[in-house]
Image (cartoon, rainbow over all chains, first blue to last red; front, side, top):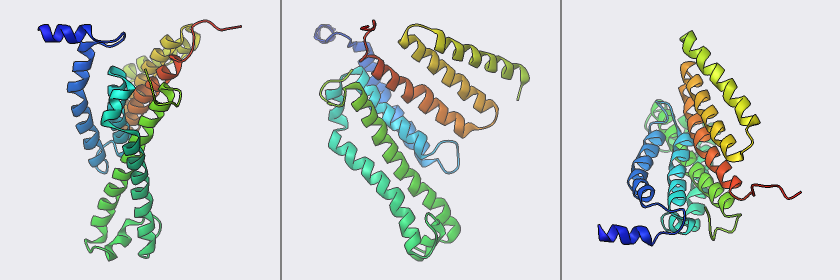
Length: 159
Length: 81
């Protein structure tokens, strides 16, 4: 109890130990829900876009409850850029790979020539790959939008 | 689609839209805009467009409210002129 009181007194203005603890418990569940929405995107409501936004919102929540510096321990600018570009690369790369194997752009059935699973299976699996790419890209863009908007683009001190 | 629920949601959407424009405080307008987004989400869900409702709930009520607050906190309460 003494420890908690000492921690509560050391907090800066606008920080609350209740909110910080709640966010610390809540964030893993939000991230699992985001992954669920992305992975189940092709046969239930949701998909890469919504799941990516939920994943991005979890990092925004950390930045709101703590500060921008602390949230960058979990998602640094470098990791954010790498993840976003990887997502875009997965999306476009899948489409171009389909075109290279003789189909149209994003015609997943053409990937049957690469790994023979059957065209119907590939149509389902191809959408899944694209959803993962979209999710990564959207998460990165949402997080960096919040970073830039809340810190005037400097990324040194936020809300 | 149940017509009484639909009528209630539609009238609340209109009330929220008018209130978001007319309210003086920017932070209050942002909050009312979040309520508007959730009501639109319910409206999409009653129409059977679950995917659109999901997007409206995450983007409209979640991220855009946070981005609005992030922008508003860099403004001052009184205008300079």
